[in-house]
Structures are given as structure tokens and as C-alpha cells.
Image (cartoon, rainbow, N blue to C red; front, side, top):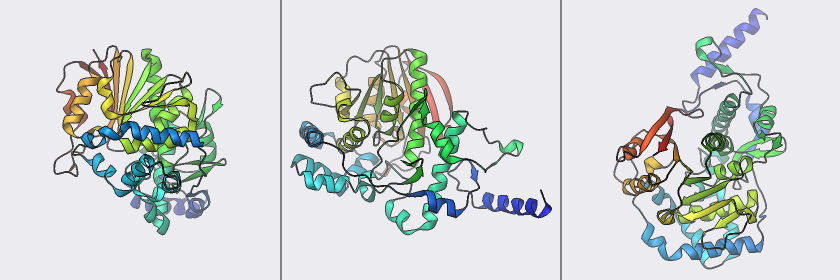
Length: 390
């Protein structure tokens, strides 16, 4: 290598270090031209049947009577009090298919996905190339971390001088990541106008990589401990449930807020098929694998044996009393486990208080044992913990 090339590389590395996004684990060497060519906003036509949409409307009716009484004072309820969420519920209850589809097919532009999808909002990403570059780096950072976890590439190590990610074939890595037991896994159907990566004629968002990691961890733990079902409290748009169902065919239950469940119903059914999703209040069929329940129904759940409970990105922001009740319910499980992937920043909770840490909740109970506590593999500032329930 000539002295000029070495000098140019050194300058480039110094510049990368100076402009490194503090949210990312890696320094990524990639030109703007690559971002412009391979990153954009996605769009899909509605692919739910009329019956699928009617089921969602009936699901909303099933939850109607308890929605007002279920509201808590926390960040997540602040989010779903937004007008877009209220409109979504109204269109379902009024069986207004046209308005429902207009709203949900433009979800990425709305506040329906605030807190559940991309890091930066659509308006910012649409109007700013700098924002697009920043979001792209965030996505590639997660892709690299997931590749490291799956042992597809080396783990970059700054102590040994390997602190910059360069010369990676991202398309090949995506293909390898989303191949499990020699079977290709299609990506989750992200909401329209989501910003993300086009690879091998498929679209991947930040959440695809982040939640595929969680689904891999769940599958590993599920098999190690011989469990029979997964119970997720607060599931976002349902990415983790979808990916787990593609690599493990056991039961997956979700407990969440009403309008978030409506979003999950639409996007999970669109991704995995209508017959594989059960909506609370229906008659469950033999093909059902993912079940959606309003969160208050968790307290009626009695058969909790051999369960893997999962919470990510929400316990610290949930109303403290409600979170305590969740933990109390979880601790009634026999031969079960809790996987938590959450932050412990203790920032303002957006409703006049402070966020809590998961261990604050667990210190209220003696019916658990910490198996491991470590930094999250994909994100700075997040803690992954596994607890056994006695």
C-alpha cells in the first residue's frame, strides 16, 4: 500500500471517529452514494382480506368497554392518547374500512408509530439527507452487531485496532442473518413510509435487526429450558413475535394497549397470515400461533407454568404500580423465566416522575433468581437480564 493511500485511510478514520454517532457501537466506513442507492422509504398495498379487517373491527369492539377504565398515567398512555390513535380506534368501532385503510396504510407518516419504529420521524427523514445518513448508520450498526452475534463476521475490537467496520458485503450478511436452519425468513411487513435498507429485493428496517436478535435469544432460552410458551408484555408492532414464530412454532402471547394491539393485528396478520393470529374474544383455531390480548387480561391468565416472559423497551416507562402488578403476576409462574432488555437511565417519565429500573420491581419479590446480567449486544446503554422464577 502506498504512503498516500495509508495517509488517506488515516485521515478518513480520524474523521469517522470525530463524527461517530454516540448511539452506535461501530465506526462505519461507507460513502453517501451507497446510502442514496440502497436506503429509502417502503410502500406496500393492503393485503388483508375483508374478513381479516372485520376481525380487527370485532377485536376493537371486544376491548371497547374497558378501554376508558384501563388508562394509566405513564409515557405509553401519553403516546396512545394522540389523535391518530384515537382515530384508529374510532374507525374500527365505526367499521369505517375506507378511513381505517387510509390511516394504517400511511402509518409511517403518522404518530401511530411514534416510539415503535424508526429513531427519527418520517418528516425529518424525508426532508434531511443528514437525517437519512444518521438513520442509515444506526441500521447498519445493528446489522453488524447481529452479524457478530451470529458469528458471520469477527467482533470488531478497538483494543486490538479493529475499531472500524469497512469492506463488508451487507447484502450477503442480510441473506445469511435471515437464513435459519437452511430456511429463508422473509422480513416483517413494516408500516408504509418506514425508512430502511433494500437488500436482495426485500426491505429491512431498524426494528427488523433489533427484534430478530431478541427472537434468537428467546428461541435459545426456550430450547435450553424446555418451555411451552412465550408471553410478551408490550410488543411494539409485533416484530419479535413474528420472527420467533418463523424460527419456533410454539405459542406466543402478547399483552398490550388497545390501539397498539390493533396495529399489531394488522401488521402481524399481513406478515404471517391471518389464520395464525388469534385476537382475544374470538374462537381460537388450531392454526393460531400468535395471540393478542388487551393487557388487563393478563391478570386472568392462570396456566403460567413453563413460560418464558419477555419485556423490552417498556418496563421502565410503564406506570410503576401497573409494572409491580405485572411482576407479581409473573412471579406466580412455575418453572418459568423472565428476559428483560431495558434501559436504566432513570430519566423523567413524561408524566412528572422518574423512570424506574427493572430491578426496582424485582426487589419487591423474593420469588426469583438472577441468572445473568449483561450489556445488550446491539445497543449502548441497555441491559439484558434473565431471571428464573421459583
